[in-house]
Image (tube, rainbow, N blue to C red; front, side):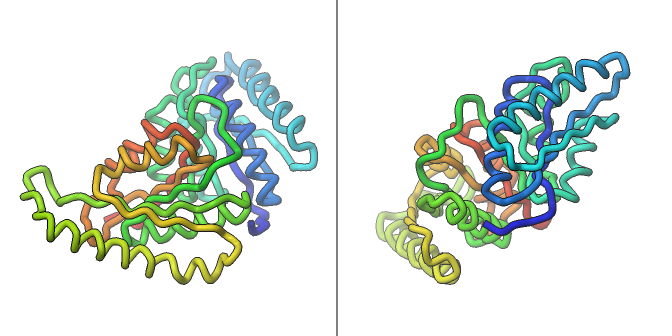
Length: 275
C-alpha cells in the first residue's frame, strides 16, 4: 500500500465507538505508513477538559497498539460535520465510529457519520459496533459506473496491503418497483452479460495487482441485502456513492446509506461525481 504524507483522520468524541474507530485507523495507518490525526470537535468551552481527556484517551490506545505510528491530536470548535468535511479535503482517509454517545451528544451520531461518508472529499470508513476482524476478504460492490470503478481500485489497494482475497460483487435487479419481471430466458441472458462485464472490468486491475487473489460474484437480488450478507465474513466492505451504470440506481445514495446502516463490518464509502 502506497506511503503518503497525508494523514488518516479520525473523528473522536469520547464514546467507545469512536475509540474503536481510532484503534482500527491506527492499524490502517501502520499498513499505509501514514500519520494519524485524532480530531475532536468542541463548540462548548465548558467541555474543554472533557475534550482533552477524550482525545488523549484515544491517542494513548493508538500509541500503545502501534508505537511507531505518528499520532497527533487536535481539538477544534464548530459543527462536527463541517469540521470533519474540512479535514477530509486534506486527508487520505477519514475514519469514524458508527455512533457516538460520549459527552458530545451530537458528535458522531449516525447522521453525522453518514453525512461525512457521503460528502467527504476522500474515502471514508465507518467502523461498526463490535471488534473488527483482520481475517476474511475485502468485499466491493461494483456496477460499472465511474464511482464504482474508484471503489474497485480502492478495494484492490486494501486487499493488496492486507494480503486478503478480493471479492467483487455485481448485484442486479429489474429497474424500478413497477418493472415487469424478466422471463427466465431474459434473466439468464442478463446474468451472462453481467458476468462477462464483471470479468472485463476486473482484467486491468488484476494485471496491476497480480498478487491479489480475486473472486467474482454476479447475482440477481437486492444490492443492500447481498452486500450486507457478504460483509458478515469480510474484514472490509467497499461501496461507491452516487454511481450510475447500466443498471441505474445500483449505487445511488440509497444503497450506500443502506450498507452504512446494516453492514456488519467496517465499511468504506468512495464518493463519486455528483449527478
